[in-house]
Amino acid sequence: MESTLKRTWAEIDLDALEHNYHALRRQMGPDSRFLGVVKADAYGHGAIEAARTLEELGAEYLAISNIDEARELRLAGIRLPILQLGLTPADQTAAVMANNVTQAVWSEAAAEDFSREAVRAGGRMKAHIKLDTGMSRLGFQCDEHRFEDSLEAVCRTCALPGLEVEGIFTHFAVSDESEESCREYTRLQHRRFEEMIRRLEERGVTFAIRHCANSGATVSYPQFAHDMFRPGIITYGIGDQAALLGLRPMMTLKTVIGVVKEYDPDTTISYGRTFRAGRPSRVGVLPIGYADGLHRALSNKWRVWTPHGMAPIAGRICMDMCMIDLTDLPGVQAGDEVEVYGPHNSVNDAAHLAGTISYELTCAVSKRVPRIYYRHGKEIARELLLRG
Ligand SMILES: *Cc1c(COP(=O)(O)O)cnc(C)c1O
Image (cartoon, rainbow, N blue to C red; front, side, top):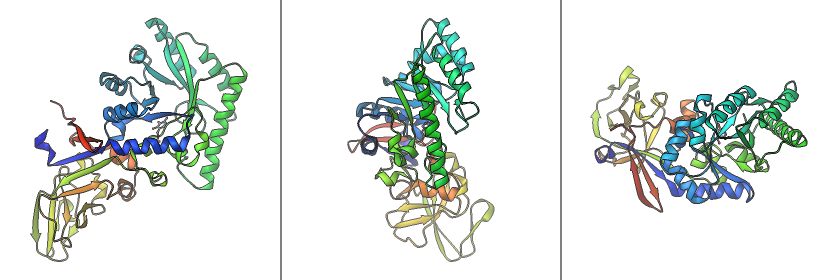
């Protein structure tokens, strides 16, 4: 592990997580539980340390999207309830129960399968009913044509043996967008959500935990807090809305300039010869490439932060390396650390340039990149995800 550290690494600031957690709690009020979404290895930030910190801070729930992710957290000693948001094959029901996981139940057919397997395993599987109010992904459909059928189906589902239905939830498609048509759609989704719950309650079917607010709704519709809110990306201090709540990015992706070289005008740099030096140039070679998660789409577009200023990426990003133009930064030397993403160099901007979202860029930081965790200003753990 030591030997890899001066290559490329990600510093994970758990104090920023603490700051963000408290800011989000203030935003949603004291009566709503905090569910920390730590799927996809906490969006690349490290699920175990993120979950541990959220547990210590007082979060009430966690969510993942794969039963193996839940198992990873349980093996690490995490005791909080965990909601499995995604698809689980029914033959994994016993594993869901053994890991004390709450499963999202997205249809009556799936519920019947889970019910049968839970009864066979001799227990009950905790479940949250998933409503599709307009995301058109998982869930009982709540559009006008299917509303009444879904109402009946949810009633039957909640009466199945082997299921302990604790909650009900839905997911928004455009809660993070401010255009009026998006706001209208989000309000429609929320009306469907509330209406289905109201009709179920009339039938005597009630839920301890009703929840719908993802990051976008947490920022823009705090009135949708209900019994729990489910922020993902903003918990990590990124995404275009994080700044609105004064949140701090948790991840700083760093690398070190390996070598600096001088070139004559007209020299081309990297594969495809897409960058041509227009002047005598100083160029640094960085040990980070697309296999570390630096998207190749950022070739000739992104820059790294140095203490002397921003250095643009010159030429195509390779699998394991890329080059930066240091001609205007004579103070920058081989051996200097640079920031690829972080507080000085926002991953949100990189995402815009790459034509994607910050989620994809932090999720892409690969297992070859060691994570170094900081808490109370001190390094507390290092983690290399490579086998062996
Ligand atoms: C991923 C996910 C979230 C969190 O989404 P963000 O946009 O990161 O806040 C919440 N709910 C569900 C169902 C999800 O799949």
